[in-house]
Image (cartoon, rainbow, N blue to C red; front, side, top):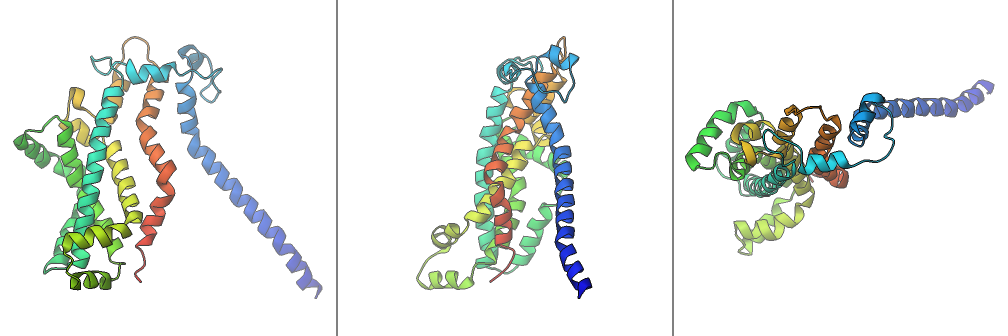
Length: 295
């Protein structure tokens, strides 16, 4: 009886100890993970003299955003000292249409492969799925040839086409797996009532799709905005996206190396994807798990 009592009273203490150790490990990993971000933000708000004389981990003496203004509108990128601003808007003009096009086409394709099945649908899906595993480097040459024949090389429109085509495999996979969970009876009932393919898609399927649309938008926006290889391969000069401009800014040295400007430029470049994940990141996992179980 006494052994039972001592064991039962010891369990809560052990649970608290384990919980405390777990929190300590989690906090340690969080600090380790966030330390580089802290250094980048702190360095971007320091003057060069403060950076040279102080420690990387030291807080800035005062909040100074002059490096941010310089990175945005004055920093030299190659021979042009226009800052990141024009390249940032290039990325905006590239990412938004490419995300919308690839998401819409992925939804249509996923709908066709699940609710309007045809002979060879599984083979078509397998070929599309294979596209998810094709490395960027493999498609550079055929894409360059295609853009050249279309006359849109070194333009934002060319990058829109490239990212829309390359992202279609992923968006189709997302929507196809999600639409499998939608009962086929909804489509059959609408077909009996005389509704066609696009009517069913726009009025029945698409209103049920916000969770997976969020997944597709977050995935595609992140991949497109952060892309460097396609931007560096298919554009030059003023048509380049902001990631390529950031690389050129960091590698352009005129006089003293301005580390605070480089850090500010990196944060400006990363800001849109950080914003998307902070605002909508929690819906990403919800959208993925929404299509994980049928029924």
